[in-house]
Length: 391
Image (tube, rainbow, N blue to C red):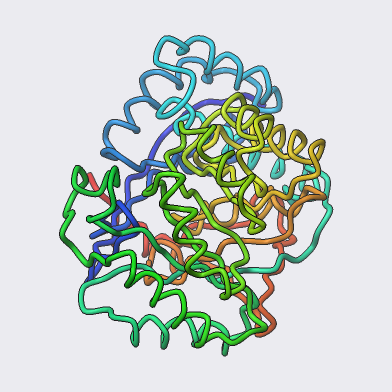
């Protein structure tokens, strides 16, 4: 079996009401799919994280820089192919956009291996879990969404059976060194630090004492702001604090982690194995959060998970894009002993809810079962692809 073609699909879902986290404004949801075809007719699927730029630029990296290293090669040699892609393009940088592009290719290669061996990918990778606990990732900022609306939203997730809920904090333009003023739509749906304290308290009241509440600052704060905020919500039983500071402020994150008895989670915006090596070695994270579409693919995320396990740290991957990102991360999480919790985006996104012929569903007990079909075990819904496809 040899690779005969590498192609991409660009999809976009415009949102009726834009949403925002601490620093990012999101009027649409975008998706760059990678399809790798073999000479015996198999097609592997992957996704490249395309955050922070256009789909076109990421597509060019895949097709112009990575494809020449793949055509005619054996997809089973995934480690060798990963090294070739990374090393031949290393002058592009060893993190960031190159890792995002390699991620999509790597996932598609693993999907092919699973299909060729007629084995569900999570079992091929180790098969530690058959089901995962899903947590509701939500509580974003939006126009006209006040504290009451937030409380009603997150309370609904608890009623549906989710045992963990995560909400956003940090969209505070008055906070010194917050990068928000330099981002797109910096005046959209902002909140003061005091208002964020109120939002957290309202969310806790809405979900009750038995549902876990995590908060995510998306790199908005400095260490002292993060510690000040956590003192203000110390009585709210926060499950974890995610990405409190800039990703490259490793010592700042370590300072926060040392000072708190609440775990620090991160950093989805780190890419490549070495970035996570530094976060773990310097005590900057208590919960490790790679993402198979962003960090460098399943190949790198498995190594990150092993490194985390050696330090007795759990892995709770970032999952926030399409259904492809969700299913690929599900297989990864289910394969490792220090995983088990799946981030499940609750915002309206047809590229998540309608991308596959058989959607990913959360059961009434808040769990998700892995598919028993080969590879990723999914088939694209062609009607959804046609409806949202870009030229």
